[in-house]
Length: 288
Image 1 (spheres, one colour):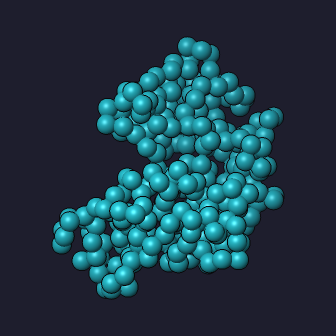
Image 2: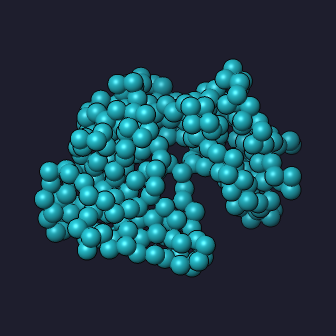
Image 3: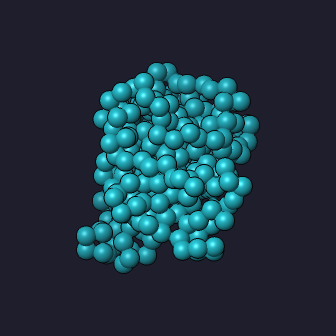
């Protein structure tokens, strides 16, 4: 049974020729969300936080992009294979998660007062605020981290309760997607020409034109499902999965594998009536 081969040149062709087909077909994915007050970790997910983060053996799972731990910016220095720490509170600043640059120390004006024991120290709540410089700031209560997303830097506008719950970076005044479309797209999403489309929550559609960034829309390369990826992302993904491969796809039922020529192979196990598993009916990821 043949695999689908995807090279970086294939992805770049999508950017150059907007009329080309997307990299791979995408089946529906589902996501559960409350209709009244959706879970913040599902609904308020900046596109920049969608990708998984790299780490190093000596960093004990701390990503290169970093995390905030009680006012301390902690990140993995992959080159030296060690964890670095910056005490933000000692600098009179807050540790925030920036979708563009990861964990960092910065001064933010949310109008909140630090209260020990509260999520994100009480500096900001899950609803969040739009700051004067066009930044959406809110508390990701699940991870207890402050998210600070520069809407201006991402050619978006900070709005409240427009394209998402509370403060969020919206494009073109926000996009509301019919619930049935989001039921089909799910968080996994699809590549529609040069555009990565996926839903955050039950009816909030995220659309990113990858061509504007000079990147290509890809599936399971630099993020779960559809996202704008660079050539370096592609190379890193190929190196990470190797010939052993892994399971991916909207239902985690697609074999993803990098061959010796640097091409990523995809095979949908569902089309064969099988299930993608690792090291159970053969070496590495297989349809069993």
